[in-house]
Length: 202
Ligand SMILES: Cc1cc2nc3c(=O)[nH]c(=O)nc-3n(C[C@H](O)[C@H](O)[C@H](O)COP(=O)(O)O)c2cc1C
Image (cartoon, rainbow, N blue to C red; front, side):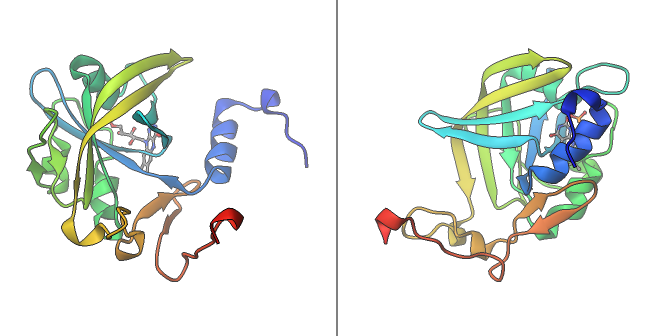
């Protein structure tokens, strides 16, 4: 079967892309509004794109009424956000924060999560999450209806027991969650992880 993307409507494109480009890490983004209201929501059009400088990119859409999603508005207002990682124990809370709450609603409270102070930025981090990356905006591109947000990582919080002596986060100690198409997710576990050394590094 051959499918030309120009013949598809955006919903069909969304289905094909989000079930093909998998698994996607989830940036569980905490922000704060100009008025000091905390916000938390998951985004899986998310990637790390450079280590020097340390950059991530997240693509955020609009609400049905055309307004920018709260996370986008807050990032635009304050220039800061925190990426919190999602592990198996946190999937229900993550899902609660995907609900389209009004801007005045604090999703930390709705999901029963602990906002801990960040060091380099104003938005709080999710205390229950094993890794938090504090970011400042590098630039925001508006492409079509989307906000493509480039962030620079300024500071991180990593649970002590998961950083190994080589400087890597030991993913086998975490059940990190990835997003697949539709309502499907996957888990990174010891059983489905394997090692493959590059030919020049054997
Ligand atoms: C796992 C997961 C991944 C998501 N990824 C995205 C995404 O990449 N971009 C986006 O605009 N919305 C994404 N959403 C939907 C938002 O989380 C949802 O619209 C949320 O209500 C936005 O909240 P906000 O208005 O507080 O920013 C995702 C939802 C889930 C459950």
